[in-house]
Image 1 (cartoon, rainbow, N blue to C red):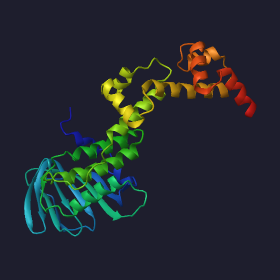
Image 2 (cartoon, rainbow, N blue to C red):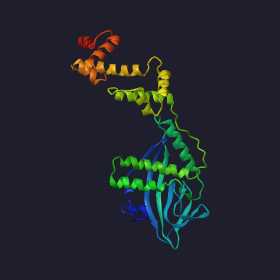
Image 3 (cartoon, rainbow, N blue to C red):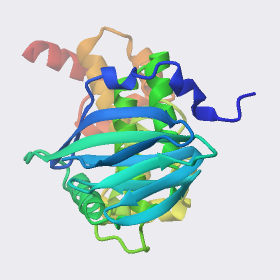
Image 4 (tube, rainbow, N blue to C red):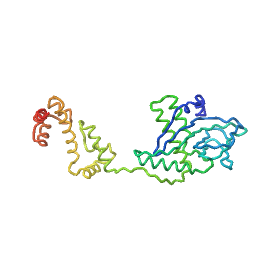
Length: 306
């Protein structure tokens, strides 16, 4: 059994970099330049250099050192650091031990779009602003961003359905988890909050519309919403005070009956049973009370006007 889960990424070293990966996130476009696992032999170093883009460095195995600007830091398994645009850095593996590095190198370009979800835009802005101001020092990969590299690689290698979407999601996850590694617990953006009364009402209606042909009760609909029957009654009274549960179910069934009468020649008895009524006699009674005519008369009337 391989104790180093990322070993598989050495098999097709440039597989991820052959893909044109461009991620739209909020008002930004994230262009992936490098996405790979590399290994530093013991004692190997890369001299001082900088990039015009962001480079995320994760250490899944081994140890070494990095100099960020003018400050040296030790590196060990489980650590992460970010070199933003223009940050001078020097990397080396320990003289006694090799060091592996997962690297995501991205260009983050502002791209204003009018149709972006404002909540997504706020979260993207908050994350990228955080990345721009991260301290120039390593920290622990506390949210396991490294695993996103392996998930993306395996999705691409196995050609899982929707693998390109999975890779793009992994890229965003790496950015988010890198920013979270430095979180102090305060966040600026919030998530949209549901109006639970409206949500429960529409969810209940949706469930009834999908199951109106069954023997529906207030209790079993409430159970699907994980609330009590009394709570569901209050939901219906608040959102639709003129229609109690029984009237809502009846309305949905009658709409279905009308469609069936208009679009088919199915016998009335069969229409009644198909659309949730116990028999044609009961349907006849309800239909006449609501529309002032029998189902058969309704069918003839619709056929005449169409």
